[in-house]
Amino acid sequence: SFASTSPISNTIVKTISVQDEYTEVKLEEVPTAITDALKKAYPDVVLTKAYKNAKSEYKLDVTVGDKVGNLFANADGTWIKK
Image 1 (cartoon, rainbow, N blue to C red):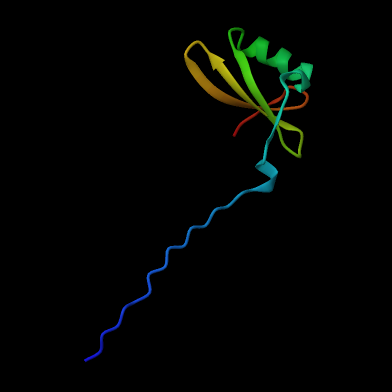
Image 2 (image 1 turned 90 degrees about the vertical axis):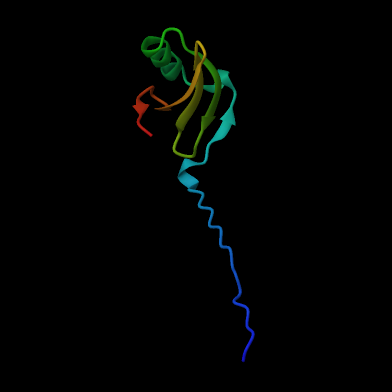
């Protein structure tokens, strides 16, 4: 009789899409078009952090009351659905 062990392999695949890689930017660097659109759409929102990717799309970390969320916008203040 044979005693054999089957090799067990754990493969973890981590995919990072370069186009969605955002780098944090200072809040002062967020275009006025975006901050204006933000105030218009969400008057009570507080912008806490902002990020920008290579396509000049912005990811905004926002807080409204006790709710925290993310919004995405183009440099001209157009909202992007993600």
